[in-house]
Image (cartoon, rainbow, N blue to C red; front, side, top):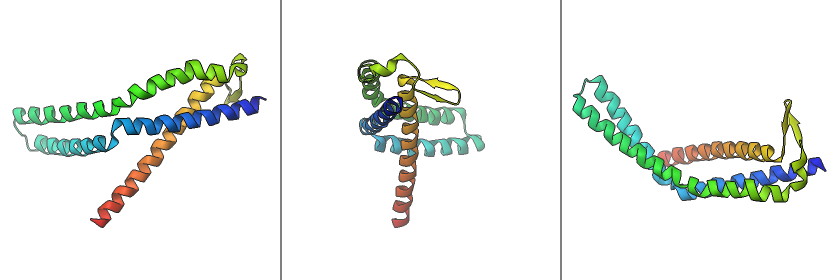
Length: 153
């Protein structure tokens, strides 16, 4: 019984993590975020060169202000997804999980490295690790796609 519940929770957490990951990427406009990241990188490089060449403080302040403005805009795009994901998480965590796994609420489902995991902790750990795995996969995929585009150009 316990192993079946553990498997169900793990599958549920993986499905949840996949849905929220792709929802967040759609809402967050990752293309715009990456464009801003490239612009910020260029400005940081210019700023470093200006510091090395002892540019006037007024020019440094202006460049730094430009960079901060872009960082703020980038953060705004990234945070958009949180307004979708956080309420979804709260609904899942406080309403759906207890309803689906009421029988598992009584105690420990799994012990890993001397740590007892109940159904909620197991859900969070699985969803978190799945999210990290998806981030790594997407980063690798983006890097491959970028290098292929650079080779074609």
